[in-house]
Image 1 (cartoon, rainbow, N blue to C red):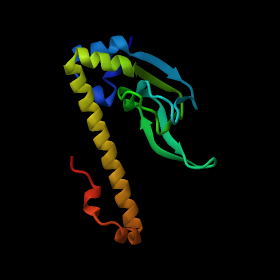
Image 2: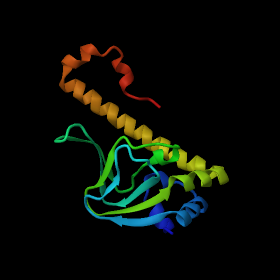
Image 3: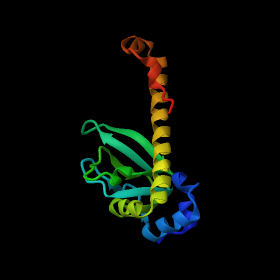
Image 4: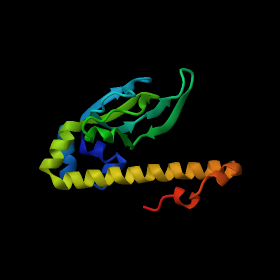
Length: 168
């Protein structure tokens, strides 16, 4: 069991009503992982939804045996592994603790059961995940625009540059 106060430290749960947080608190587990602990591996079935209370987790993908690309650095208050809600989903990235991490975990299968039993919980959770996803996409679009600003020769190869920035 996890404390409601800990759940309120997670961005996607901050505005969730306490009666729903209580449901999550009863199902979630609190774990501490050391530096370099691999939480998710490429092509591994994703079974767990992770919410980071403390620490930093690198989301990365190996390009070559010598080169890893860091796709994101997950900070305290953020979450990842929402594909645990999609049946048969496998990871397209590796998630590795960059320092000791305190993490709240939820089974994807149990989350789906809870969502069937409580539609209000499903709504609030999915709204939080959608907002997080939108923020992520907007950040990526801004990164692309900065790259294009620094490399104007690339712009001439893009037909619809106005649609790179999202308005959702």
